[in-house]
Length: 351
Image (cartoon, rainbow, N blue to C red; front, side, top):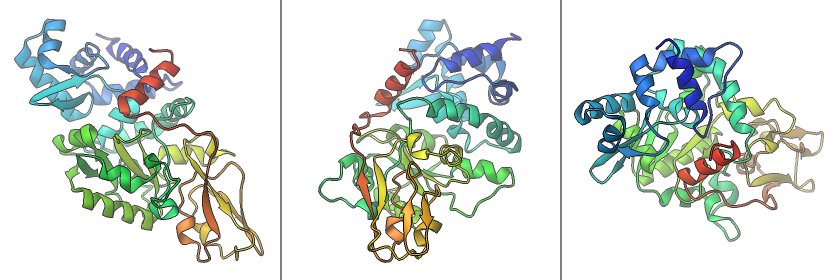
């Protein structure tokens, strides 16, 4: 029993997103914070695919009724994942990022925030090192609209309209930083979930169910606030859209200090400034979340490798000198979360 958390760490590291070891052992402290020893043992008996309780009980030799209660309690804690299929609940082991970490939005306290803040640089850089990213950047609607030539998976409002379940919950990244006394001024109620992910949040009382119209209004709110739209790296079947700030969001916070954030994030566009139209007013410089624009005396200019194609600069340019250009050679994202996770697992040599 004494090594249960070491075994759980190894088990979590074999899930698609991984769970890397650290020099400080903070990853073990997180497991002890979230899992009891019995929950750790049961988690390691689950698979990376959703299963009915009856099937799990038969496979591991457990009483079905007791197991159902245990699994539901663990799902409510956000340490495993549950989806609905007709009138059945299916359970599975789930990766730490994107997954267990985000599922702690209801339960996080100061101790957990400190542990996560120490660990996320290791987990985040491990995820960013893969070719297939779990999240991507899409432009705000006003920067590209729904016009001809814009791929459907980059038209955020059209994407949202195709979903079936909608939820909104507090941003866990901003909650974590607030607990660490690093509160920012960006709105918190702008983390959007869809379909199975959204239903999981709703069923766990972590989120409020909303309508599609309410969801579209929240996208307007995010753009007005200057937040980067980061959906799951999927096509028509979305899992989530994070509305990110570079002060709290690990993806942006870890890449912003690097020379070329655009090489580390998955994005389909980059901004271009027309020097003949630019008046160097500075509005775009102030708006850019990645410090990608250099203000000159007479004209502003993009800094090579820093633009992540969020489009926030386009919407504030008073003379319409900025536009987004599609990056060449970009492939369409995986169709859904399972397909994307399969690609991640293959790249890590797990499939």
